[in-house]
Length: 421
Image (tube, rainbow, N blue to C red):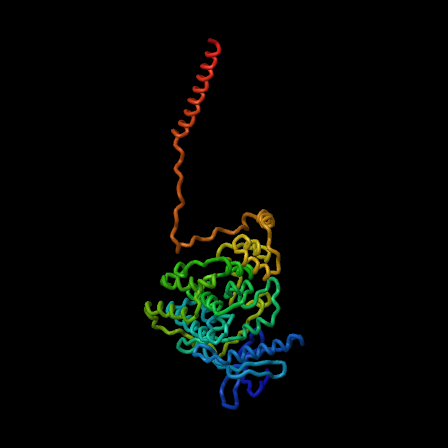
C-alpha cells in the first residue's frame, strides 16, 4: 500500500472501486481526515491527455457544489499515473448495503431519503451539473438519517472515456433513463428518472425494470410500465403511486421537469403520514466514504450487489436475449424515431416485417412472451357483446327465398298463357 499521495498521508485502504482504490488519509496542513479516490491514468497515449483533462474538468465542477446533501470535494491532484480526489470523509453506510439487509424500510423514511437526494440533485442541476449515475451505491446515509450524494461528475467523466460498443451499456442498466438507453443527450430529467427507479425499489423491494440480461432490461425500460407500488406493498399510500408514475414517465415532457418539484411532492406526501419512531440504523458499518466508481460497461463488470439476473417482470423470455431480438420487438412497439435511435445504439439495420414474421415462426410456443399482468390501476372497459342470432331470424331468411321463387314461377306461367291464347 502506498504511504503518500501528494501532500496527503495515507492511513489505510477503504476499498476497491471499479476505476481505482479508495484510501483514508490525513491532510497534514490542517490535520483533517479525508477520503481519497484514485483513478489510474494508464491509458493509450492518444487517450490519456483527453481523459486527464476531462477528469480535472469534471472534478473541479463537482468541487464547486456546496450543499448539505452532496459530499464535499476538497482537492484534486495527480501523483505519477494516478489522479486523485480528496473529499469529505463520511461515517455511515451506503444505501445499497442498507437495502441488502432485506428489511423493508418504513415508507416515511424512504420518502425522507429520496427527498433529500432530490434536493441535492436540484442544487446540482441549478449549477448545470447532471449526475448521470444516480443509484443506491452512490448514496451515503450518515448519522440521524442524513443523506449525501457521491460521485458527482465522475460518472460523466468515466463514461466519456470508454468507447460504446454493440451490446454494451455504460452505467448501471437498471437505473438508466430511456434517453440514456437510446444514447440520446441527457439532462436533469434523466437524474429524476433514475431517482424514481430508486424510489420504486425502496418502496417495493424490487426494481421496476428487470431482466435476464442487459437487452431485456433495456427493452423493459423503453416499453414496460411497472405496476403501481401500492399493489406490491399495502403500506404505500395512493399519492405515492402518482409521484412514482410521474418520475418514471418515458416521455420527457410528462416527467418532473425539476428535482425540487419532485422533492416538494414527496414532502407533501410525507406530511400526511404518521412518523416512524425508530430512526434508521446506520451504526453497523465501518467509517467509510463511498468506494464505488462504477460508470463502466455492464458487459465487463457486474456488481454482485445489484444482480441483473432476476426474471423479466413482463414475461420477456430468454428467446429475446439478443440485440437483434430487441430490435424486432422495438419495431413492433416503438415509434419510428425511437427505432432509428435504437438502431444507431446497436449499430444494426431496422428489421423488415418479413424478417420479424420469419423470426416469430421459429420461436417455440413455450418461449413466446407470456401475457402481461393486467394493470388494475386503470378502469376496466367491458367489450361490447353481440347478441346471438335467433332461430327465427334464420327462418325469416329461408321464408323470403321461397316467396321469391313462387313469384318467379307465376310470372313465367302468365307469359306462357299470353303466347298460347
